[in-house]
Length: 239
Image 1 (cartoon, rainbow, N blue to C red):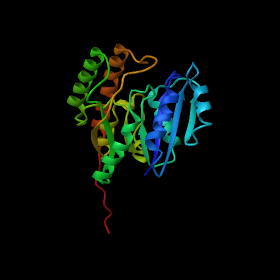
Image 2: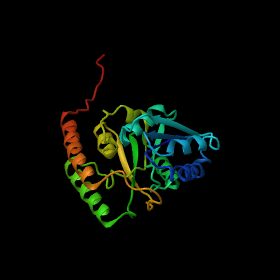
Image 3: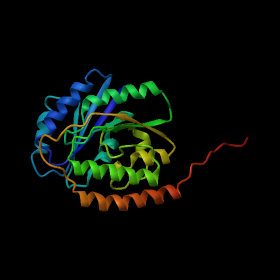
Image 4: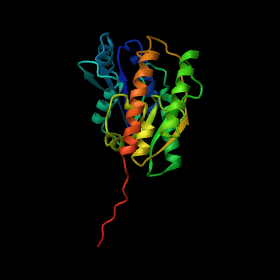
């Protein structure tokens, strides 16, 4: 299987080298793979570390946003530039484990369905503070109550999905938090796969709880509006 791994990063200078090495270790036996790290306007040495790593890892490609545009736009830039049909995404903070990517690939092969467009990671054992775990469970419960996306952990950064189906979705900031709902709305199937979740080794989260809550409410209302305005016709040509 040929796969493109897209990783959005912003001020992750202490995490990118380890993450690149782990992705290579997890995927070097694949038929073909590439890593696309999208530097979203970092102000530290993240871009320098990525440029240095390109000398050692031929599969590594680096994209740069001159200014920070947010995680969703960085993912979209990476997926647009990717050359393979299946995309795996990881958060750049190192909390997602690249060793889980082959598990998602194996789950995809086991189901062997044309309608399976996405496999979403499920962090069943969160390695976060108690408050962050609570706020995540609360947000997931609210989202499922309104969107019925049948995904216990929509916010997990570790996902495997079809490139063409993702690019066909209407883009908006923070779409990465609602991808299972959007995929289902477009007619695809989504399954969740249990994945590992690690403590952050370096740096700190770029999102505050209040920021996430405010943006999440606005985005949720927007996705509800999209669902109400969306239809999937069954078309056949009369001869």
